[in-house]
Image (cartoon, one colour):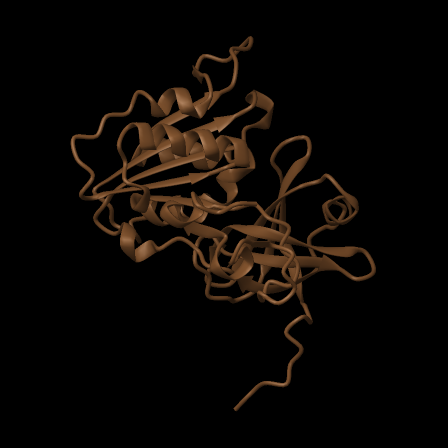
Length: 266
């Protein structure tokens, strides 16, 4: 039986948590029950203000988190909301990470800046033991100390993975790794690729050069996964705003195998 519900109509959800991550980034927790694959996104909106695609930055049986950068009219308005207020969402949309393919594999995840948000649910599944892998290597990069997201999570991830946390340049008071994520990819060594899976998420330029480094290490394209940032509007593959060549990023992606993504011409 077909539903007559308007697929573009959002549902109100109650905000139950708010955490300021950086000067301009914050995480909202909303009360809602939805089946979600890590890497999927929602269309988040406020009436008479606007709508934007936001990746899921974590989720549980009856809650979802969105990590948002306040950079425009909608996101600034959302930042002004408080627990008890309603946010409006529709989704989830898109193709997420192929979680089943990652089971009992050597998993390498490279994330830069806000690109850490969509891989956070995937990493948490591994750390909690819900997704068994042979090993987990994380390379997480930020511009500077003040832009680091999910500090508590990073501490927990370090206990369960080989974690490289790096900022772009040395700065006073920072005793950790420095340099772009590509510099740390170059240090990796792979004897073979039979049980290797690589995930790369971040700004387009970062993903371009990070995937190039893995290819220089002879990692096969089909063992690399990326997540495209795109202006996704309808979420249903109808409007064409996110279309690249023959690919609708809101449906076929945002997570794509690099053997496909490398050939896309924007």
